[in-house]
Image (cartoon, rainbow over all chains, first blue to last red; front, side, top):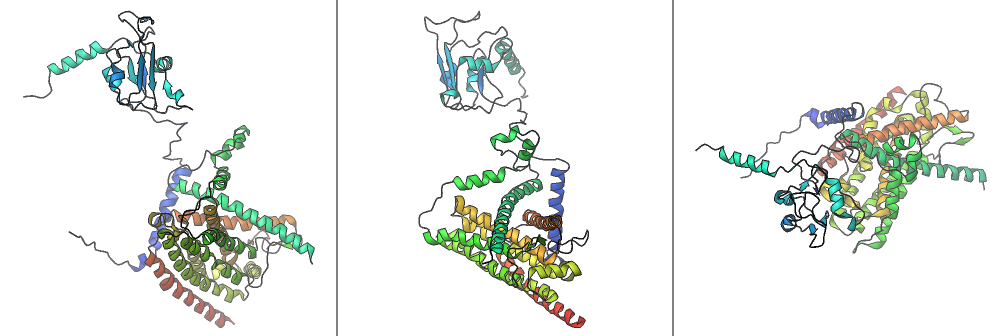
Length: 187
Length: 353
């Protein structure tokens, strides 16, 4: 249904365009005053100023070490299989490769590569990891001068990832189990 | 052959062209900065040549103010590929930017930008028919735009060209009519004489403010600035008459627009705000020393820059006029108003005599 908007004819005062002109001058001077004198600017000057990333932000995935500085990854290759864009490539140690550098683990990857050009920050690798060895962290601006440079290897991922204290998975499982016990919905 | 005249004219010509080009470049920067301030932004503050950061305080400060941005803009325009779209009318396509830019540069010639330096008058051509010359040249400005719109062989530039031809021709009439009271009061077409008259009798804007208002609005329309930027209405016509243009050819249209702004600001200052004169500090009579000559030029520049800022400021103040409103304003408001203004001024002068 067509709605006819009632257009009032302009009054004499409005026809002079003076109210519009005065209004325009007011608005523009107010904003210019706010930016120039009071320094209220909405622009964030990016490389110098950075916004605070929220806690749940999913940035680039990095490998983490445990509290003793050992590799947590056990080269199970679950993340490699789950990765939708196939950004992760793990080379297992094989028969001859180095064994795990921590107790309670059989092996660690000989090489662990994430192609950051392919990664879509979905977080599946973090979700699937049984050892809590890979986490999506807060980095969002990864820069490189070549494609080869954007494939991050194991050392780089480990050094960028930092340390995470202990394995939390059993604690989380416990909490999940408890949460299931007292189901919030009353029947 | 008067070699003295030729040499001094060439020097003045070079300086004027250089100054106008510089003003054009930096008014683009001013436009960007002022628009940024009005819109709560910062504006260009990054662009700098590699050596700028080694200059102690000044380098970062100039970078912050965006002072190197015009250089980068210019370089970008120069080195961009000069692309000619398929299907354009080649000759006109190449001719149009030149036709737009030449009248824009020519108008500055008759404007007295200072009194005297040594024994040289600070005006390139002290014509007896200064205003007439300006209007003659300004009315040629429309051809560049119409030609550009026609040559592009594309519908939006065509619309832009058609709009501009209607707009510029209608506002030219109001503009011409608005200046007649000034000429009636002064009794001379020479711009130097008009300034001289204002030095003794006070600024012309006090004698005929309506003329000034009409002249100002018409010059907004003539230079295709908002609220009358219909020929290049981005929201309606993609880019208007210069949609199909790129690189230096586009830059020439830009140059023409801003040169027009410079020359119409200069005209407003000359006709209504006393040109290079100030009513105090003895700045109201032709200079008898070099220092005073420079002071006069600075006074003129300051007044002109004020109007440039007004031009830029207004752009961020108002929305665009609708086409019929534009025509209504030009033909049914300003033209009768200008005619009445002429009549009243003439009657007033007749009563006094």
